[in-house]
Image 1 (spheres, rainbow over the protein chains, first blue to last red):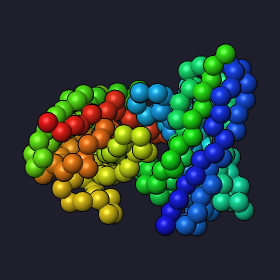
Image 2: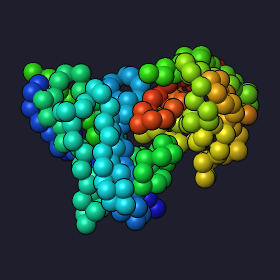
Image 3: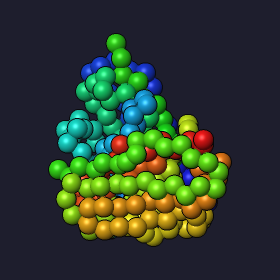
Image 4: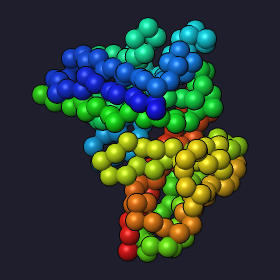
Length: 124
Length: 107
């Protein structure tokens, strides 16, 4: 059974940094791209970015709202993807989900497995 | 940027009813349209991909259709466990845009 488990969510002040982790099991981690999606309280879903598999050079893509502040990485030896967030803003407050893309490239772009999410609260 | 709209924003229906939700794109997106269910307090779940393909393990009462700019998601025979918010999602050219969602509850 495929499982994605996010961790690292916390309460942080604006301008600080935070790293989220997504530990995967029940799959051949190396084969897949992983997307991060967030959901502000009571709001809709917003894609943040994704990382391709090593077969596609592990390259990353980001939404305009986080580009330059957020960095996605992966450690295939640990079956884990990461979301490094810096210069956090109050509007980054959200539940952050890790999702699997059922291919290594990010195309086609649907997400067939989701973690349970981890809450990040940015407030002074 | 392509904009996605969904209608209705909320709907109430009775058990056994047929429920239809529409998603409209601001320009032609071919069949690059997916549907997700999010039950209260839970993560989203993929139901339909590429407009009309039922994800493995998803009950056959769920279906999707459409191409271009207009898409339809249908529940044929509403069940109590279908109470959720439903999102469409478009992907293309490194953009993955979700619709605003349709909240479904039982009448």
